[in-house]
Amino acid sequence: MLDPKVFKAYDVRGLYQEELDEEGAYAIGRAFVEQFRPARIAVGRDMRLSSPAMAAALIRGAVDAGCEVLDLGLVGTEMLYFAVGDLELDGGVAVTASHNPKEYTGMKIVRAGALPVGGDSGLLEIRDRALAGPGEPASRGSVREVDIWPAYVERVLSFVDVEAIAPLKVVIDAANGMAGVMLPPVLERLSQVETVRHYFEPDGSFPNHEPNPLLPENRQFIVEQTTVEGADFGVAFDGDADRCFFVDDAGEFVPGDFVTALLAESILEKEPGAKIIYDVRASWAVPETIERGGGSPLMNRVGHAFIKHRMREEGAAYGGEVSGHYYFRDFSQADSGTIPFLLMLELVSRKGTKLSEILRPFRERYFITGELNTPVPDVELKLEELEQQFAAQGEVSHLDGISVDADDWHFNVRPSNTEPLLRLNLEARTKELMEQKRDEVLNVIRG
Image 1 (cartoon, helix red, strand yellow):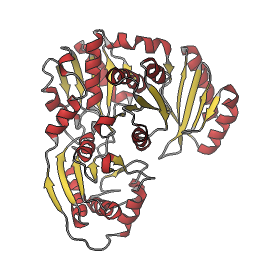
Image 2 (tube, helix red, strand yellow):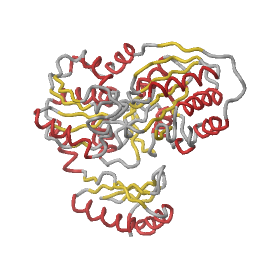
Image 3 (cartoon, one colour):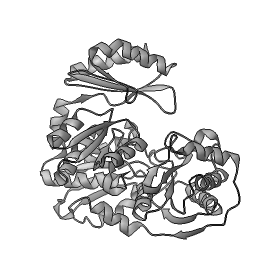
């Protein structure tokens, strides 16, 4: 089974057996090799119940197309990216459906240098080849198992000074995802840190909650446990552990904008003057923190493919997205959930104060709505209406959707890649103005 609609803007994702099964995985593995002609690729898989069979089928397809496959086994998505970059491979595939519910399967595909393969960089060609059936018979390739773990652990720990990390207490929610497998070997090297670990057993049926901490209902647990334990902070990971989300010592969720700003501060201390990429939705906290730290802030359109490309182009040290994706030049320009966690441990240790206090200046100065989604019947028409209504109030940009920047407030509205809805992110210098402008913009979107 291979439903064409499983090919999304950035990856492959669909309902297991209904939209994508082992036959489809075989076809995709074969089509990937036939399209890009890689000599060596890596394949890794997450803990979903379908992933062992899906990965095996994909590997068979790649081998039948003549490729040498390095089978990484059970690894987080970022470990696949790391392997492709570190071993100088021609590409790789992570068999994962990331934060989606248990019924889903999927794949994240990259080329050499861990460059993502998306809708505008080869994924649609892979789709067409896979649906058309196998090409000419090739000399059969080979498969061998490779252990990437020791090199991965050393690389992520290289981003921090382990000796500078204080004896903090941290609550971790692995959501029965890949963080429960990935973190223990890293935490072994941080014996001074007391960790309260929840749902570390990898279980693709997700018996406790869905592995998507962006949804408030899924992070209620980490909020409660952080305050109950009196921890320095809490951290929750998504299913394939390439994203992490923080809760401060008071149990308050830390928006991705503020995390991006804090991590930028850390990076700039180690690399003064560095270029740092942030996405068009972000709070003013991000560029203003980067400038204050002597760095160069570069705004970019949303999406990992666009940010990773820009990072290479600019030689940027770091990039952050509101959605909890944090990218590092010295980690194959790839996103990681583990590195931000380590950087946060180091940052709180070095500042010697509570995370809630570190965040206080942000919370007192920047008032953000978070992302507000609204289904609309005609996306383009609504974007035109928004421009007509608000163009006179500030500077207009079409970098990604529509953005309007005024002196004391700004917003971005972007269409979804997969459904007819608009995503609003808005910020103002006061809470009252934020609420007023939020309601004005939503009235146009929903009117």
